[in-house]
Image (tube, rainbow, N blue to C red; front, side, top):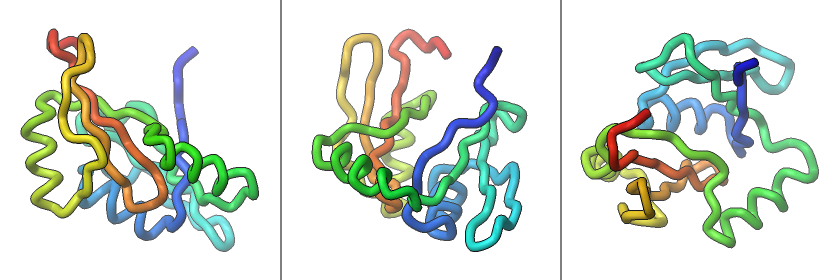
Length: 132
């Protein structure tokens, strides 16, 4: 068994598409119209056949309070691994990405947290030992 698709709830799919592709560098895997919304998935450009991230509309009534509570407590909804956190932080900052937590050491990892502009905090992690 393996993870095929996981999702992150987004306030606006068009805005999420822009952020996740043009800022984070993911590539679109699926963009299928589904009425008012889309089945919109992205993948890492480094792993085009890897796990898909579904940019899922925040339509369910339980989602807004869930997302608000996580953001209020500073809890990231998901985590993405990077090879060089400092370089990625610098690159994303130049693109106007807002970080809520600057790079810091946390045991075997270095981490930072950013705002995805779609109602979520996202954690970036660099493994100190270089493992994947």
